[in-house]
Amino acid sequence: MAGVLAGKKGIIFGALDERSLAWHVAERCLAEGASLVLTNTDAAIQLGTIADLAAARQLPLVACDATKIEDIQALFARAQEHLGGKIDFVLHAVAQSMNLRRHKPYEQAGYSYYQQTLDISALSLHKILSVAMQMDAIAEGGSVVALSYLASERYFYGYNDMADAKAMLESIARQMGALYGRKRGVRVNIVSQSPTPTKAGSSWREIEFFYRYADHLSPLGNADADDCAGVCVALFSDLMKRVTMQTIYSDGGFGRTILTPELVDDYREKV
Ligand SMILES: NC(=O)c1ccc[n+]([C@@H]2O[C@H](COP(=O)([O-])OP(=O)(O)OC[C@H]3O[C@@H](n4cnc5c(N)ncnc54)[C@H](O)[C@@H]3O)[C@@H](O)[C@H]2O)c1
Image (cartoon, rainbow, N blue to C red; front, side, top):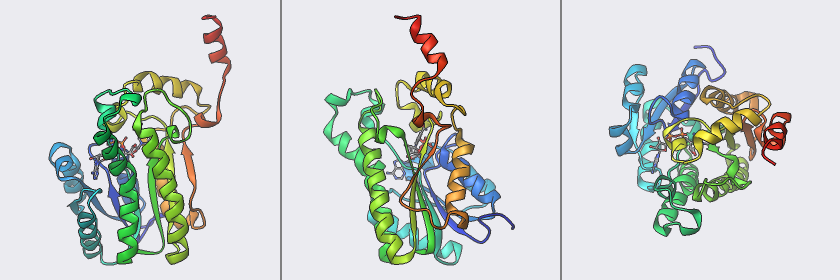
């Protein structure tokens, strides 16, 4: 099949249901000619609808808890078997914070939850890349993308311990990008996405307000899940073969905008 990913083999972490960013990335990769293995935790496979996507598109679905080294090893082994060779690209779309879900204020975080947030949402990328390197499972010139949010670098009220996880995730991407790039020419990048109504997105209490605010402030409006998928596909393709260790903003320009005339008008009425 023709397409910018024709002949490429990928692993997609994190599709839970049809709202998931990873679901949209998977659909877009298939449209561009890629072969895929889908993965998520056992619980997510039971509770979500990822099995429907796998069945409809006849894709292998392999359970893997991205915090467990043995699971990741088994996943890379099975994915290479299914796809018939080394992996060309990996999407990391994995995050969870019980502090956010339980609406714990940041300064009163539960520390076991906090550690779990970092383990699931950031260290999992380190583990995936470390296992891939040890197994030499990613092909020369391969591409790994992890999804992040701007709260990694700027204060966002209510984003809680996930802001710390995203800062760590982005740092891991840079460090591993340098190491894996030299070792095997593998690229590691971050896509920093607009707020998007998904299960993980909805754990943030302020998401409804913030979704509208970000849409209002962004010169191009919020990037939706399909926009995110387009950026990921570009990064997986050879079109971006010398781009690595970068954070690419799929956010309609939000992160570069401080003030708009509309905001001045809104605020003027309140002071
Ligand atoms: N939705 C947004 O507003 C938004 C914005 C920017 C970045 N992101 C990021 O995009 C990524 C995907 O999130 P989403 O918004 O599509 O929500 P989602 O809830 O659909 O996806 C999160 C996924 O993480 C998976 N997961 C949780 N624990 C796991 C584990 N131990 N092992 C493997 N997988 C595990 C879940 O099962 C789920 O599929 C996350 O990293 C999220 O932080 C989301």
